[in-house]
Image (cartoon, rainbow, N blue to C red):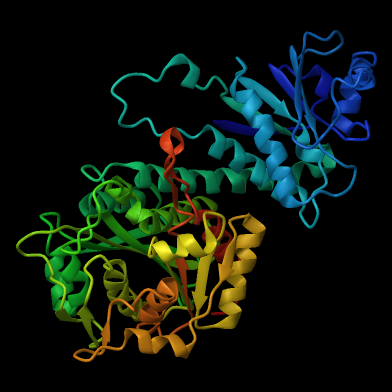
Length: 501
């Protein structure tokens, strides 16, 4: 999809559809007023007949009105005439886009950018509008052997965002940021949706190498298993050794700031398929485990979004990529392994493998002298029970960092909620034979998993995001990667620009 900004006269615009807003009390947005005047009151006539009441997210299509060039007018209800909540605007935009998808219109002029959103500026409205269009029109078609059916083929090719001349700069800024973010989210979705016979650790490594070729600001390094063995990454290798697919520790460096500036590190769990290992998962829902690398996919997507935006910061993105398989060489319940940090772990459940690859990645991250470290993982089913699919769980060893992450989530509407990692929980992962065990029992499963990771993140400011409920959807034809939390991570990193580190 192409995006542009426009300040041209709305009624003279040569597009196939105009999108304008109407309030619940019958008042018109500025764009709707211009169309109403040019069509000699046709919109007011529709309202007077009460065919359209302006309720939030209500839509109505008008066609072939005299006085304007566009053959279609899409009326969109804006609700009450008061500054609306961000979530209300997103619902309205989504409703409008849903109607546009069904039209045979290649180019449209979107005029809901004049909507006043509480606590948000025009740049935010433009950014989120682009993101909503991209999310609503995304399809993963790479593996289709035939062209999609006609009803799934998107006709829409260009969206122009309307703004008055004095607001054009802000609108353009938001559009550009939304476009960059959407490029990153699309990359994350494509990786997440790729089947595990395609998306292997080596596939992720190749994607990271290609990213470095596409963006001069990015450099990629890949550690193979022999190199990881020399570094003492026994926990990571205990996961990958059961598979014929070799594990990879993939590092992408974005250098946009002063070379002396400490980087912000983001680490993604990249289990490209998770059978559970010897602690085998039930077979009925195992197909979902292609999404166990959504943390790594979100790191990749964030790195691409940042490379598109070119902020003056330094970022290191790490994808801890492995496949968890049962075999004669796989780790067994009761095995004890030594991590890169020197601490030992008793593996009581081989299906708690994400924390094993992440703990060595967290130790590895210390070499970069980071300003902050955030890891992202589809780590625990318990998180889905706790927070559902709306909020990502946040755990942190630093209150300021936790708040910055939550603020970034609120601003990007990629929301997160903090859970505790009090010392009280640490006793659940104590082991009689090793320094710790990799599970903590039924109680507080997400928290004890975070407590495990916290033991490897004591040297820097650290946060852990559990995206088990937000990283993907699993319902029929609507299943797939969501691209979260690329929005949150990108917003967090952009907020670090200009800060001392």
